[in-house]
Image (tube, rainbow, N blue to C red; front, side, top):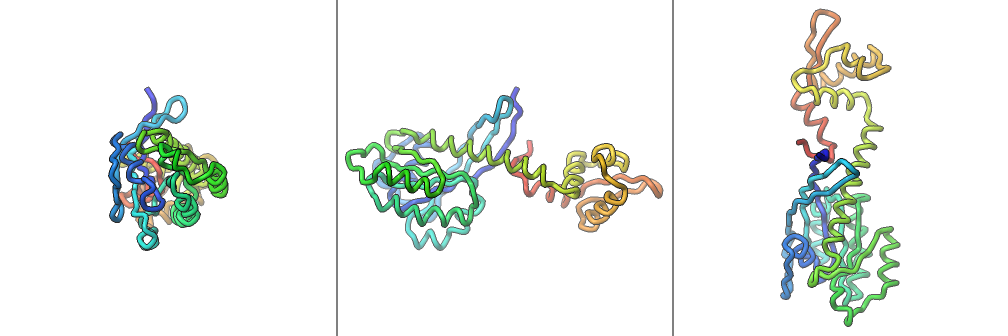
Length: 268
């Protein structure tokens, strides 16, 4: 049986009006296509559950929220902070039949990365089914993608070509980034974070004084006392004394929240 991890993620699409952002989402989520133009008013959110394998024995159950934004520039500028905040991946969409839609991504992408940070990004040139009306060269697409160091793909919301592949590629990118962040946090985690993590796992049982020294090799009595006193003062744990020398430390509800707030993963 694989080890199950749970993850809530946010993917934000960007691009000019009419490039097919809504149609790409509809094709991926519902496997449907609508011939009439689907005009997005404000922002829309679609949700889908995915199973993403990671390595040989880990399966990530992902709750993916896909955000679709109105393509007008005034709206983009007004709501970009809220729209891109918390996004763990980005999809920049252009229309194969409209050259200006590709070059507009030179404004859309930096604006998104400024808020979301260095998250997985894909450039998607939609409407591959309209090859006879192509207005963008391969070199132009490649040049733009290279300028942002991101992969690109030609897709068609109408036929479904490459749509599922690109959404799944971004899902895999989000999982990879989640594990990388977890590993980096484990390396950088200081003594206070380690203490809270240990106590969070122990729950109401807490940890006794001698158990801290058994688990945290090299820990000194002075370092432990300083950190425990500080964390207790912040309301993150409670110390219950057994005489003058021994004690048990138990995490508080506030401490549990603090130990989880930077985590990418959902609890089982």
